[in-house]
Amino acid sequence: MQKKDVKWGEIGFGYIKTDKRYVCNYRNGSWDRGGLIEDADIVMSECAGVLQYSQSVFEGLKAYTTEDGHIVCFRPDLNADRMYNSALRLEMPPFDREKFVQAVVEVVKANAAWVPPYGYGATLYIRPYMFGISPVIGVKPADDYQFRIFTTPVGAYFKGGAKPIAIKVSDFDRAAPRGTGNIKAGLNYAMSLHAIVTAHNEGYSENIYLDPATRTKIEETGGANAIFVDADGNLVVPKSDSILPSITRRSIVYVAQNYLGIKVTEREVLLSEVGNFREMGLCGTAAVISPVARINDHDNIISFADNQVKMGPVLQKLYDTLTGIQMGRIEAPEGWVKVIE
Image 1 (cartoon, rainbow, N blue to C red):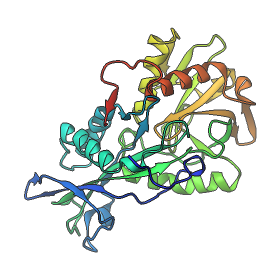
Image 2: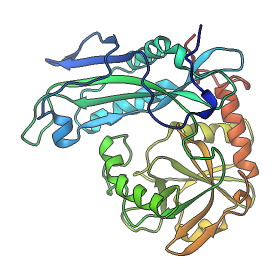
Image 3: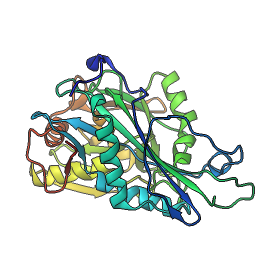
Image 4: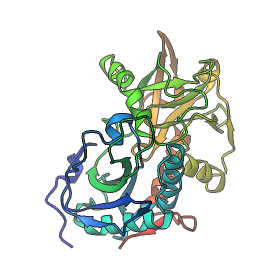
């Protein structure tokens, strides 16, 4: 198959329109058959539920070209599960999990020419999303919904790829106690926009958010979960009901325990103890693992000794193993890799 004429090694993390997208509509109490279309524009009422009350959820996953030339996706069934649960929390009709995975397969096949070739460090980003489309003026759920998937080829999420970054402790809260922090709702990300723009203007790549109740515990950043490595080389993963259940983080925990024999502890992590760790990483679909060199906590600089010049040795092993599984260089656990073609 002839690939598109794209400089694959030079693309950033941005939107490039591809050929096809998937659309399915919910009307009169049920989802229609859905299918692929070419039109990238959405037409809706000025009073659509998503515009009035931000009733929307989304997912993010990637398609890769493996070393042996196959196009694959990584654990799309877990994205289907998470979107199902996100929809329930926002009183939206959940999209069938099997139909979700099949829709991902269809849209990736239709845009196979946009999947970057192996070896460029680029992937095809897949964005499933759902929103209230019927008019809503009173505060209530919409009646009708639209589920869509578009794709776009992307490079590294953070500039410089896996080079260590600097982040800051945010003065804002990412989520409320017993709120929506543990689902992938668009409104959570809208709340983080002012904070991320402020951080960028101050020279930082991201914010780290503290727990909203006590502001003493590490939660996550605006776009990724946090992980730490202690002085003994063990992996420590922050635990909170407000943290989004990252598929990448769950995969890293499994890889650490079952591929690398690393001890993993999932627990509350106090900001006051973070300086004792040797490595810190941000993990998610977009970044995979990005090493953190330092955190600025209101001019108190917390540095991670093994992450100053490059990714620390434990995070590097985790990164190499996980991306090796994704790219077909290492045998994957059963069900982790969905072969598209």
